[in-house]
Length: 253
Image (cartoon, rainbow, N blue to C red; front, side):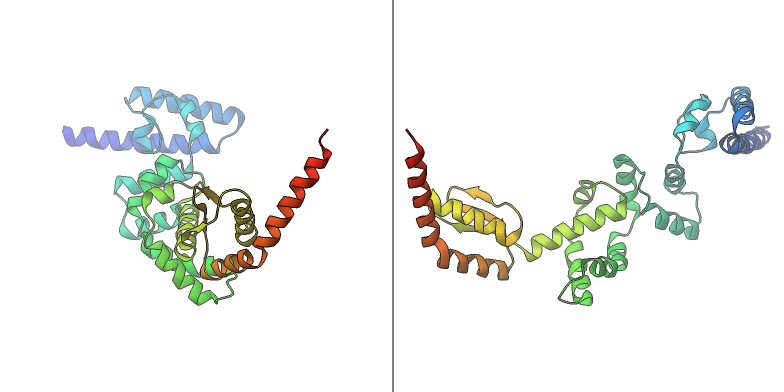
């Protein structure tokens, strides 16, 4: 009797899945009719939408189908563990580029993805897009090394698909690796303000003021350039500041 019950339930689920397909493909009256049939079918067999599709909520309200997403359904299939290995691998390949997964869904997907392999596969494309003067192969290897230090929290901090998040996290790790944060010392007042301007000019990013001067991420070449500019133009900056102060004073009454 129990086997018969299981068989009937399986048949009811299969029919319900077909009704979902009719509802999704239907338009106008055809869609409305499929919705009514689906709702009646769920009630008659004590089923919910979740029973028919693991990506759907536990409800008999057909309106919940409006929020259905293919990527969410695919993720639910993967998380269910019922897919053959080949189908699982294909699904994961599609999911890493799905750009409509929520943060929570990406967090559930992360442990299932071999991030090291994904970095190895994508690094060449990242290097090509960067157009590195050091050569694409060398840049790609540098990205692979940086990517090994990326943590799940780093990936989740960015928006987009898992692959896009991984790229941004890897590029950030690579930047920090090649441009370590450095403290450049300068006296308060004009010297510090001049330093902040030089750092912004050389790096293209605002530096962070520090009681001892300023902090900025610099590679070796940028550091050498900053030091040269400070040595060659600090006196001129001081003179310009003094002249500006005097000129301002002359405007006061």
